[in-house]
Length: 152
Image 1 (cartoon, helix red, strand yellow):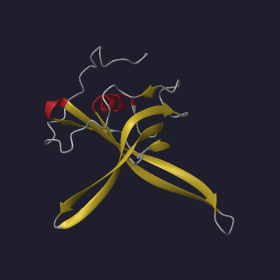
Image 2: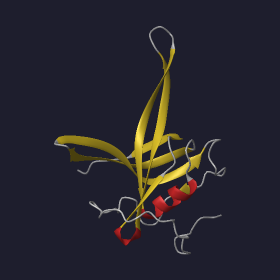
Image 3: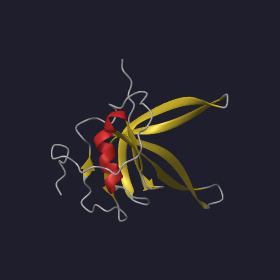
């Protein structure tokens, strides 16, 4: 039986998205997303706990995220959990990312009042498992007509 790896988050961007361009003009955009929950402790004091999530978008979704998302915006993100490791001066380190499949800008701080949902034809999960070193960052080219299926 196959497992299920599905994540749904609503939160605010902690920083502007950062774009990397790899061999073959494959784009990768990363940003942090803060989710918070508030509860009362044993003494009745209100406590807010914030979790920070590393979000990764690839290809078409990366193009859209890089163009439209900004620090502070509230977004809904759907994707899956990916954990990876690497060696740093002989110390094994781990990171957990959310590999986004789709996102939707929501909330009063979002630039898109109608709550458009973005999920490109090419799945964000179709990323290379070990991409080549990033090419020099360049300004994002205009979206070609076949990629531009946005209603605005």
